[in-house]
Image 1 (cartoon, rainbow, N blue to C red):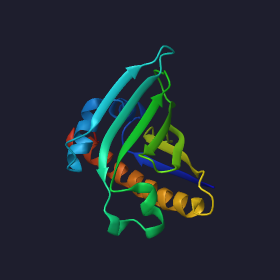
Image 2 (cartoon, rainbow, N blue to C red):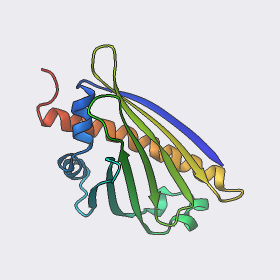
Image 3 (cartoon, one colour):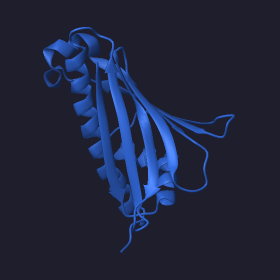
Amino acid sequence: MSVKLARTRQFPVSPSILYSVLTSRAYYDARFAMSGVTDYGYEEQQMPDGALLIRLTRQMDVKSGKVPAFARRFIGRSAALVSEFIWQPGDAPPFQASFRFSMGNVPVTVAGGMTLSADDAGHAQQRLEADITSSVPLLGRKLTQLVADQVDKGLASDSRATLRYLAEQGMLPA
């Protein structure tokens, strides 16, 4: 069972600026603060090949009213959300990262890639492609679609928060 998700978003800054934001702890501190999240983990590690690993962790309380009955047994009342981004070494666009998200014991994997490149105006274009898979027979398709919908909402929210962060930091053109 697999659902593919592809999204392209534009940001009115250069790809290099967007890359520096997406690879900074200050951005994630601000991003979580915008959502009212105070308890999270941030880990940054330079890999031997020059890649940069950023791992974010946070405990999520799951509101049962927002989770369909068929999915409740997989999710439980709380789960650790782990997000990992591995940015490939590079000094100029396109910047590329692979990512993976997992949530507790939920039998769904979200993995994919992100590319930051320049559009015709020199502004950042963020291309995300994700593959959401589940190994659960019968309910796997429903479960992957449920997760895909949440990932899509999360990506839209992240995009809005990134634009807000850029504005608050005075990085957007006047």
